[in-house]
Image (cartoon, rainbow, N blue to C red; front, side, top):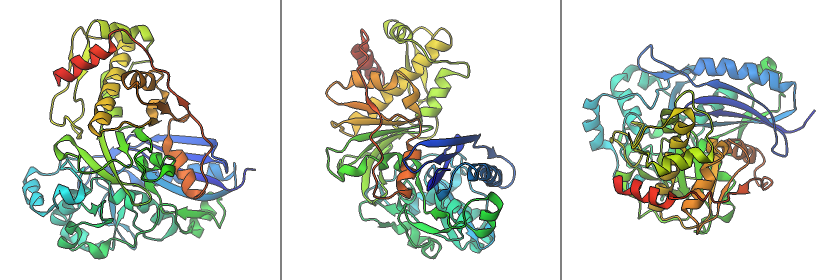
Length: 454
């Protein structure tokens, strides 16, 4: 039986995964489930109990496959849990919930300036500080019961280990709660009287405790299995690329999934613009990282449709020749063109293959736009779900011929990052490939026409 394996709890906005990884980083098993939002109760919220029950069942299965040494929670951002000693005092709010417009004006006075947090004003509940301010105002009795405000990875770590902790990658994810360049809480936390609710900060790789004994008995996992603090998912993807430190020559990373996040380690923050949804995240080492993002996975699905299937080169070429383009945006959840209604111009794509081609071209152009806006001139590495698209990295390489465009060999960079937290100080084996540019006639002109239409 494999020894010192890692269980990764990977909660993305669209799917929840539990992955069993061996001591050298190879995936032994994976289970997947939709991340469903419940619309009953006080407001739309995450179905944490269903995730919990599903997770424990899968962990019991994994316990028979390997000797597990650690559990690592990895989750999407803009999400927190308010808990007392017994559990949640309020449901975990879905960040896509449209908070009352009347609250926005009041919150705008409370939130720190962009120059302090590099956290742009975002729609719905994507600024976590606004979520918390609304919950405190709308549900004061429940909010007063809270003992801790836990970022979402640390909520799951707390349920598994009993130890409350804070961690910078989720705090630094457009929350309005953190100053990435100063590596400290923002003025909002003190102004709202929340300082006592945030637990002591721990590194993402820190073991908080062993697994709760009752859970160890229930799942069959070892009594000495450790629960690590955990990390924000895009920062898990970034982790393997931090070896070059804060040097500007470090590769930029495109973390792809429900969100496509372009991260440019080492780039200055003074070029970031709030109106373009540019922001500074905090990496696992606490360093500020210039970023820009759009909801690429969601937009891809919207453009490609339910019956889409991977296209061929000829489908891409046809769309380029007939000047069929998708103009942003196809999501109402932020991005550089937030608030603009998406449109398809030119002849409509014919069938699922061409819809897949259109979605691919759109996401490549948007990624290229974000990289250029960040001033990225170094190598770029594609992580996550778009590594499964055979044309994404080659098209990006064709648009950026002066840069090396690579992609990892797995569709979930979060898994590798979580493995690294368990084996802190060990670098994973180099895996992936450099993309060969896909030279399509008229591609450069197609991009320019797209840019001119923005």
